[in-house]
Image (cartoon, rainbow, N blue to C red; front, side, top):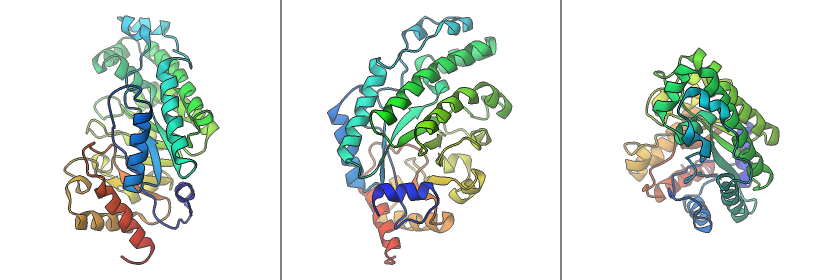
Length: 323
């Protein structure tokens, strides 16, 4: 079974020859490192023994719509327009993804990290300004979310149809319990988020939803419970929801994760024996169908890659009956 078949079988809750795994970390904050960034992704994939690649959007967190810097009052958001498909922000990300896809030559699935509209708006302005404007004129901000979603949809289209990605790794955020009620989130944030995700699903059925616990604060994770994605990744250690619990919570969809991504976690700080034991525990807890081992979120960039290779070796041993 190829790595691509292994992952796609997991997405469909079908048996696979081995439990697939996928991890990622940030490579560089610099924009458009071109071939160097592509090589970093490919080297990491091969050294760790990964079953798929998540291409990072490092250098492209900031949404560079020039009008954003002119926004002072909430109503100013009604003048926001998309930057369009020829903007370097979009074209350079597509070229990065295209380079990675070419580098693996069909050997594995490739997914590109895509942020939701509210996060791109927050990156382009500030959290304080965004939340202030939401209180002043929620409809103006919702309008801006929709405009930003048009640029994200353009990026998604080109990533899948031109770069050749198998799908996107869609990062939704901003549902911390202190920020919105579940009802407010669904009314204000979900429409633009779902517009992007539904569009991605119209281009590829193999998209991953990442329910991000980036701030370390518990989310109202129920707001994403019915989002239509093939596989779900969430912060097990932030949401206090195990892989098996999450599989039930998200309607028996494929689950991705299990390991704590933080430096205090076993994956970063444990011995080889502890990492192998945790790998075996996670599989015993979650089962072998519709499961991909990974982490809650991005790993520290200084993690020793051989630690990930230990997970791969243990999974191989379990598949071959040697463990």
